Image 1 (cartoon, rainbow, N blue to C red):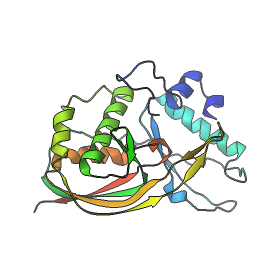
Image 2 (cartoon, rainbow, N blue to C red):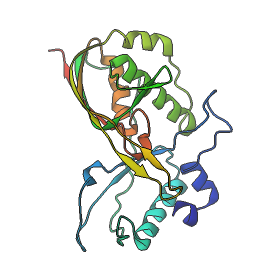
Image 3 (cartoon, rainbow, N blue to C red):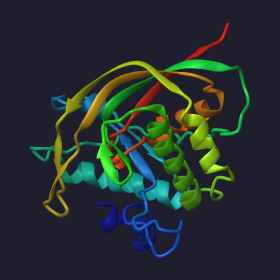
Length: 243
């Protein structure tokens, strides 16, 4: 629908972003959006019932916002889901612009819990892993935030990646519970079936966490790990501060 009802430029920028330029070594650009729809899993809606979903968009240009809105209006008219049911886009609040200051100071944080709300898959040393040690989790968050900022924001993060990673390695995992989830999705565009499983659950971390919390807050919006665009890697962070 985006391809059919928006300009070629908007479609390519939102759904097939170019890899001709950008960060060194980056072959595939991440798409500038993520879906937040896990609350719809397993739900059925009768005629006349309403439901909602969210999109977090990192390309905030007005033409991109308009193109996405038009795509969902046309999708509703054409029908979607197993029975291709039709739907009307009844209400769309004004887009809310959220800004997170990554270098913000604040109270000392010594313990956090990270809930993995949707299946999470991380990569470490070019291998998919279920390892959620803080240094592994934070490295993927740091890289994702930096890449999105480079491609769709003011530019690369001006931080010492190596030194920040070294400090992240000092954070300890003090508890947690993870469960493996197996899921698949079928692309209506290509017909291909993709594995979109991972782990859900939670992990508790302790240490000098203050400087990492803004990155974790950013990851609540952009997700972390593989296939974030389809809603994987959604996290929620709970902070405990030193009394």
